[in-house]
Length: 481
Image (tube, rainbow, N blue to C red; front, top):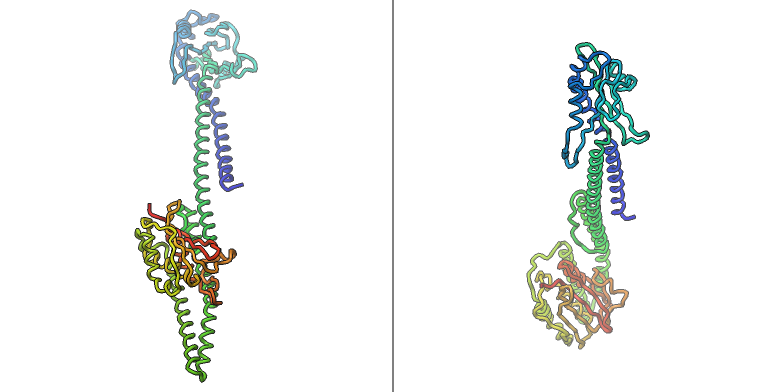
């Protein structure tokens, strides 16, 4: 399973379980909390009515009820009041309090309910019994057996005159009357919870996507480094950015180490031939030789010295290029003019080898943004390499043109021996070269390595194609729009 899916599933599991448990707890507490508030209000109401009923109950003759008393009339008037109240969007159109009053023995003296239980003995009911014993009296009873929605809540308060207990006032209210408020609260909480869960998942998706993108950028950076392409580390914030910079620093150290080791090995190999030739020529020059042989061996010393000098100079040039992160002085340049200037510098060699130029395509208007010195260096090495392999009297095919993707291309083909297909991927690597025509001597390969590095610095590339006969080289650089 991919990293992004793992992170998202883990976030989804945590957020989902947390939201589920939170909603479960909140929804479970809604109904009890509303009932507790309702009971609190009934306590206040019962005690208020107890005070209102005290005088009528104290003046009541033994054996009589409160029917017809002022308190009973007020209770009846309350039950008959019209009501149409909008409570936070819900309509209340009925008054739902049920009131009954008992004497000190639990006999009902007044009942506002439809059953009219006046005269019945309620002393066994929990609300009345507890209140008569001086405790807090309350109970909940179902009007319909087994139906929780038919529950009625009863709260009682004692009626006292001084220390004398005159009776009990009980206020009852059906729980069903507050059920719409409970349902609405639960619905709102559920919607809010689902919205919070959706928001959490959206945040999880965004965080996961950001994390996956950052990791992918690091992966692509590592893959490009593995392929040998030099580029700065991706700009990633936070710990991933620190990791990217640490990876780049580690790459620089490893590359530098490997680069030095590889360069030393290759340079040692390249130096063996000219040094051996110099030593052999020097030993022979110590002996008695005729003028012709002495001149020939002295010429070998000079030639090998020049070879060593060229090798060192090119190696220094390549080392300086590899230290550059980008071109030093980029400016708009016409590619056609740069190629013609490089050809002019090689005019003598072209004439000596009797080489002919054939332009397949010219585009004087094609421009690119490049460092003039580096571009001239690349073109000189590219053309010089072609001249090394081109047979005398042959033709060099050249082309300057634009290609799709805003690429300015300089293509060059010689008619030399070419390069085996298996060796094409190694062209452009330092110290890799093939033998010159008519000779077993190989070059250092640093010329094409310099061209490849210049192309990389400008965001371009160097490609090789077999031409049969010969080799076609393509230098592609980003063109100006």
